[in-house]
Structure formats: C-alpha cells, structure tokens
Image 1 (cartoon, helix red, strand yellow):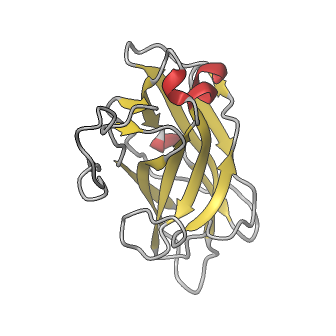
Image 2 (tube, one colour):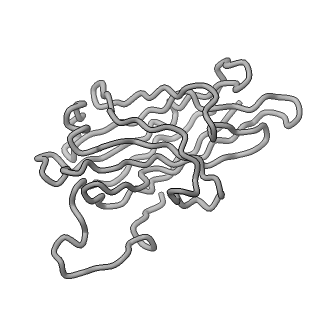
Length: 197
C-alpha cells in the first residue's frame, strides 16, 4: 500500500547549536487516485550508536542533540531549507531503548500527507546541543530503520502495509565539532557537505 526509500544526507559534523539534515526519505502512496484516501506517517524509528557500535543511552544522545525535527520537502527540490519546507514535528527529548528511538507521529499534522498515486519527500533534521562540544561522547552513527516506518489511512487511521524497505546508515557524525574550528578556513559548506547514498 506504500513504499519508503531513504537516503543518507548526514554531514561529517554539526557545530554547537547548529542543525542539519541526517536523512532524506521518500514515501510513495500506492493507492488509486480518486478512489483511496491519503496516507500519513504514524511511526518513525532511528537507531543511535557510537563509533564502536555500542547503542547510545537517552542521556548520551540528549547531551549532544537538542532536538529532532521532521520536515516535508515542500518545494520538492530534495534539499532541506528552513523557512521553506514544512515543519511537521519537533522532539526536544529523544527517549532511547537500547539505542532505538521509536517516535509516534500524531494524526492530522500539517505536511504529513501523501495523496494516492503520489510520492512526497521528507527530512530528518538534528540540532546539536549548545554545549555538544563539551561532551565526552560526540561522535555517533545513525541508522534510519526504514523498514520500520509505519503509515496509516489519514481519514480512517487504519494501518497500511508497507513494501520491504532498506535501512540507511550514516557515516560518523561529530556533534559540536566545526570543520572550521582551527580558524584557518572559512566559508559556507552548503554546496559540498552532503553525501547522498
């Protein structure tokens, strides 16, 4: 009834207080236009670990991440633009169980809709804590459990069946470490800090 595809957009580093895209993902509604109802996301799962493969605790992730946000790619350009793309949800405390964040998404939120026969793009954005650079654990790896993403009928709130999907994992992301921290370089990384894969 729906299909999901995820892409790694994570940068190598997110500086104190800054935010950036970790994943872009697409949801396709396989329903019939004019016959079936739209769908909406109902659950998203992310897995957080350190570079040694040890699952993070809630304390560890919240020490370096101020918030998680999910956006609709409103202009369909595959690039997250704050103030242009639609903010769907914000989570200011990430509660992990054995490294896994299972985030339930409320019904009827603006931007959380895919109409039958269409595909919409979404972004997972993380904002670094203002003091992330002062934490002992700052380097992490994030996996989007794409196969665990759940959707429901937006009108009747009944669960929909998703096609098998492939999880997507980032490289190492350093929180609170600017790539310009040595003071030598300066500039804007928007054109080259994204790895798609």
